[in-house]
Image (cartoon, rainbow, N blue to C red; front, top):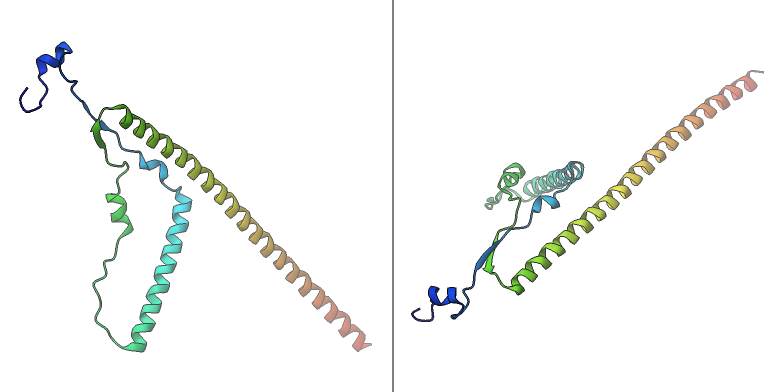
Length: 167
């Protein structure tokens, strides 16, 4: 070939330099990192509460300081950002060599391990959350029961005092 380019005829005979092939490596499936619907709903509620609190603080600040020109804040609509979200990472293009293969295998293995750990931690946190909710419900039930007992014992005591004072 000319100027260092491999000669196809020589390469087919095994005499010339070996032609390096390129490979396009598939991206990682990011769908595996999505939160379950119930967890996403909890996060959405928290975000909405924070946004409402920030809006209330901003309204209080405007009232106390007067009108200020608004700075160009971009409001992001969560629905539109979800539509634009990709489900895979970009593809990678490289030469097909052992180091590149090893790197991609390592990437895939690490990602797989991360997804497993992510799922385990999420499951653990969901269990802790369920225990907290159950504990709070039990506490509220016990509290309501204690109030009921106190009210009934208080009214019974009032009735006894009324009978004693009448006699």
